[in-house]
Image (cartoon, rainbow, N blue to C red; front, side, top):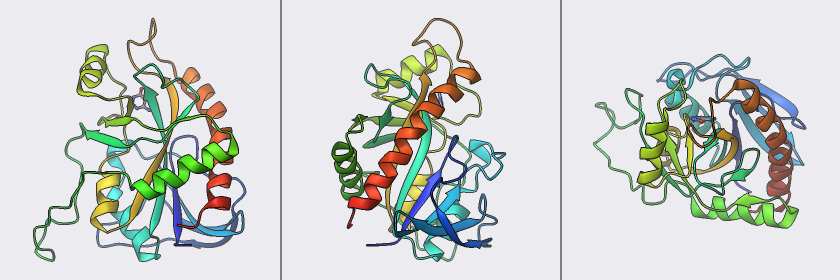
Length: 248
Ligand code: HPA
């Protein structure tokens, strides 16, 4: 099996069940990563875990050093990344507390350091981004979910907003017209940076709330926390199933 990393998002600052063997504070040419890289055994497989927002959860989505995080994982020999992320649900199937494995992405972020290929060390490189999420990694996640009887949405377009605020109703309407099913704040540039370094990348998106305007009234943090808590039980089970079954 290739070396696997799990990047934990909001609601997943620590990986339950990870028998920790090593903690590394890496420095990179791009600055400091979000947290220590934690290596351990998860279901008898070696896994590297990184808390995307730091531990404790203090780094806002637009302040995350995505380049340092991905560079650090590459440094550790990681080839496959499973990125867990909290999202809002836009389209009908994207029900709070459920899980989606997105297959497409639209980037609405701005002013983030979004590429490794911008200085004299690298020739200008235009990576292919037809499939932003690695098909074989997505398929392995989907197969694990089906095998474990965990209900998931097998497709979805993830729209990445700048945050940290949530969206207006009009913004969500526009995103829906664009074809977005999910809205989150951390999917980009993470997915593109992983691809720039030739790593496999897939996302497990846990739906924390209906996006703005999809229910009456405002979105509350209490609702987000409650749905994330419910969804995280399935995430843990999905990760166990994925690791138990996967030879990728
Ligand atoms: N919008 C953006 N990001 C999110 C949301 C949302 O509604 N919920 C969780 N992350």
